Length: 437
Image 1 (cartoon, rainbow, N blue to C red):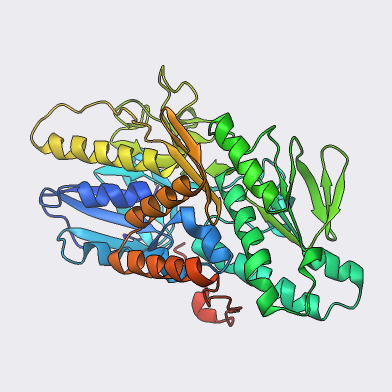
Image 2 (cartoon, rainbow, N blue to C red; image 1 turned 135 degrees about the vertical axis):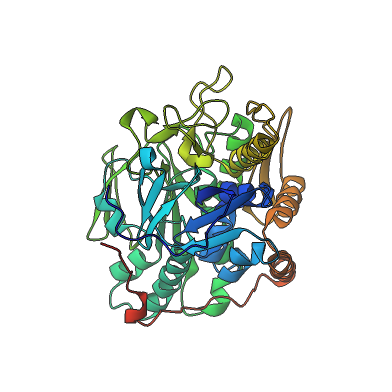
């Protein structure tokens, strides 16, 4: 590859440069843990902020403001030397030249860490990408919030009952944690908040459907958790449909694999995730879209390249299909890789990565959550309080922790956080992407 332009990043001198692609849970944790006295750390991401993905659904349902779950990446490293962030997009890597090409130029590296996370999986049906709403980023959560609020505004002026019914029918596709939590949040809105905002609408006509291709909800958790989630959603009048896949959605008509149909103008796709790879890697480095790594988190047959988090596939005797694509795996991988790279300076032998499963939590609404914590499996208000506590602890930034806590406390007492704002951005040419040919 001919280098046409080198990205403007300060020289590293005698230091080794570690280039981290992605500012998610794994990338951020790695950058924090690395020894910046011996390494120059360069992080790139297409956003200039870290996104707390577990709470996207609360932004989408107007329970939290977007700034409460998003934190500027540069702010994390204001007092650290030898750290540099660039907002750009990685185009591809040239392993034999130790270069990553981006839309701001080429970035040379000594060590490359791919922490690009996942995007929405449409399971080969890309037409659904254009007709449904995803929930994998802060901008998407804002767009989904706008869609939800706009539906109620339009329902007030609907010309026919058929149009009004389509606007008041909400379909969530995917029975994982995000689908369960989004459905529960919509149900709580329907019961406690929306009737106050829209007294002219009969909310008995509002339907919430949860469509899942699996035989049970929360397939990655225990059967007890699945049953608890289904019971809590059913109590909230969420209509659950199992063993069905959406095969087509156009002209407000959903067609499913079992032959059934449903009309709606609000279809939210949270059915699965697809790992974000990096072009330029050899084909043998991938399996089922994920980058294959060894127990030292090193990418097979790629010198000085590592991968962590959702995009990485580590197959072991305990996890023959790889580890779950959750934040805890990314955080633990990042911590182990940082220790190994820091130890490399002192000529210490690297240690193998071993995942410690600390359990899973999912919330369905106020007072309702399910928990799988090793041998302890429970649901209800105790699980709900535990879910709140864990998420407050793991949100990045003290200001964000406080903001989320205040919003949750306020909502606990009166069900009415005043965040139901329909904000449509004005088009401007400043958002045009720059590119380096």
